[in-house]
Image (tube, rainbow, N blue to C red):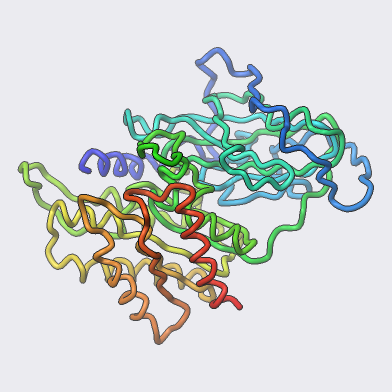
Length: 422
């Protein structure tokens, strides 16, 4: 736990300097493979004509370059994405961030940069995974694809061998920002781009830790949970599954290990100095573009105004409390959580805020024993309204929810939300 919190502290300290800001220029590729073409590895099994309604008109647009604009005339962007004019790219670093395009042709490619962020061995290994969804596919395991690391623009084939015709491809970052970056320089097709589908009107935003990041969600039945990147799929968190069940847009802002507050500043059982100051990530930088963005890159809240905000934080606070036995912990976590809610309410006053709890169980620490805390926090806002609590049914497995569990929990939450947004 101490080593993990030290990692988060390092991330916070580096936030002002990480190469995602307007002043940064991508470094030269040291791997000697910068322009080598990579492919998804499939032949477009998800194909189909993907017609968007009627005969298509040739727009003559075969390539979209993100230099001065994000080309929103042809691209639907999802998540907190950042246009970097000097780098000539769009940074899609956050979980579930990405894009959707429609085209007439047989293939789609992009140029990209993806670099490791975390330097700690064993804490995700720095590989970036995408979910590539072709023609409306809802198979987020079959579309799960590793993106080779590159420090200068390289080409990657997102879809190929499709039936000649109209297609729509959506690409989402499955790996959290704390692990690896992802920037898109251009998109190209062998045919021509057409207007993308209309975006969904309902908007959901989720704040959280490794649970929202989808840590361990990709593991198969019977497979042991690990910290490897191939097991983390942010499109299979309960929050993402809930958004899909409601047919909603989805934004996520999450950092594994994040706490809501700091409760102790002293020494641990070994006599070493300890506090979890570095783990208070989400409340401190929720107004930013990304946990790894340059400090000046503040997110414009008017770019995405959620109807519903989901929060599942506090798990790491509770685990830390069991290890270090903080004084007056319950009072402090209530105060810290409430302060975070007030900051969100000040930015998005009309959004319905739902505190989620109970999706994570841990054999060593009875995390769910604190579920009542979150109901009490929500009830403390009863005079203001629009703050609720949802306690999930008891998970069937210990640890982070696997994809089948996340789908079940997301369905439960969707039913709860239908009663709020009807």
